[in-house]
Image 1 (spheres, rainbow, N blue to C red):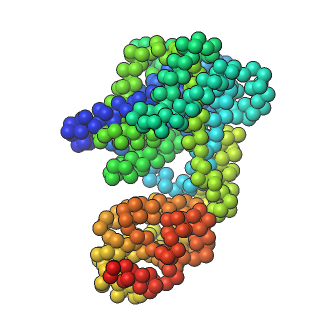
Image 2 (image 1 turned 180 degrees about the vertical axis):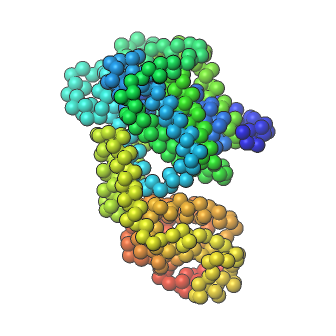
Image 3 (image 1 turned 90 degrees about the vertical axis):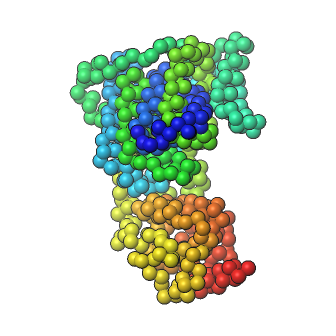
Amino acid sequence: MGKAFFNFKHLKGDFTGGLVAGVVALPLALAFGVQSGMGATAGLYGAIAVGIFAALFGGTETQASGPTGPMTVVSAAVVAFGIQMNGSLDNGMHIILLTFLLAGLFQVVFGFLNIASYVKYFPYPVISGFMSGVGLIIVILQIFPLVGLDSAKSTWAVIQDVPRLFEEANLSALLLGAITIVIYFLFPKITKAIPSALVALIGATLVAYFMKMDVPLIGEIPAGLPAFQLGGILNVDPSYFPKIIEYGLVLAVLGSIDSLLTSVIADNMTKTKHNSNRELIGQGIGNMLAAAIGGIPGAGATKGTVVNINAGGKTRLSGIIHGLFLLTVLLGLGKLTAYIPLCVLAGLLIPIGFKIVDFKGLKHLLKVPRADAVVLFLVLTVTTFGSLIHAVGIGIALACLLFMKKSGDIGEKGLQVERLADLEDEKPWQDEIEIYEKYKDKIVIKHLYGPLFFGFTSYLKDQVKALPDDIESVILRMDRVPYIDQSGLYTLEDIIFDLRSKNIEVIIVGLKEQPCDMLKAIDIIPDLIPEEDLFKNIDDSFSHLREQFKS
């Protein structure tokens, strides 16, 4: 399982981190279960199976996995399909669980085929548009439960049904939902020691119980260990297989992207490097076992992973403990969940939905290159109001088109960062020789060639991360960068931010018109790179550095 798994000197931190991550995951697992259409029980089952086994077999030491917003939205579409085909949730369960099982199997296959290495070729606008659409779906579908009413299963149907909100709204439910949202946002201002989602869940539920409010409840979760539920999947009508495979692939692709993005966050926090292919295998095993016990699929959960690390989690044991805590809750406190109002869960999901929406990308929609803006808007619209399968298909097709359009003859040879003192393949340019000899232990000069776009941003980011911490300045020579897209723009922003957080000065030389306009449009200039750190030629930047090193 990896050497760190058996290193029990981290046991205390792993126990604390896993416990806190489990506390954070509990209300979300219940809420996502209800959102999926399978009920709170399915959410808790999925959180337990994915939480334990993705940690056990996965490739990110501190990952806390479970149901997530994006995965739940697609799961809800699968549930709706199963009900549509067979008339009820019980009758459609075999279709639903077979889809979840295949999704996990596809992820395992992805891991063995090294598919993880291709995730970096998804451009920012495609991922941003899809995730923002998922966030909006969560918000829209929780509007009716927030006021104590049943919701339609599609966003467009909800919008058409809006008049019913004003005719049938349960004001008690609306009050409880509002209390939940207020606690969720305000409690962290008092203390962050206790997760605000848990405080909101317990606080609003107690208000409903003692005030005897007439609001819909989630119902009791069956006590005891979950039963094996895949017995009937062999009886599924073969005519449903094409759709089952489609949904399975969408879940697998989305779960893989979701998990790997969280793995990168964990890497940045722990200064480690995850194993992408092993992570997909672990997530796939977790999702297959979740399907086997009737749970919804999940992925690496950003919030749970972050709190796990911050609370001391160091090894995969922390993720396993997070899942075991949820299992303990299932065995001991299942009956208490019967008193949780559905409007309270809606009050938790609405803020979570808004957090998934990429407001940064939307804010810059009119400032980034037009092709990127069109792609983001198109994927967002199709995701929110159309078919999730079509949205993923369109996103992948547009990613390929963008890649072919922008790639040209650029190659990764021009995207290698090396210390000046160790330059072998990339020799210093003639106009850099003098400063190379004098300040080779203080400065790194990076030569960028060709357009900076999504196909190479991941590679550039990894190379810059490898820079030693004892350098004082990084010079980015962008004389030969004619174009930068939205992915490149945000990658450059992340790189500059990380370097400046280490007190490393970043200097840009020879910035062309289009990249300069883009950097100014989203305020990288002057917020991260002040005007005085921009130079038209290398000689001026060297003069600046000489003066700086003298002082």
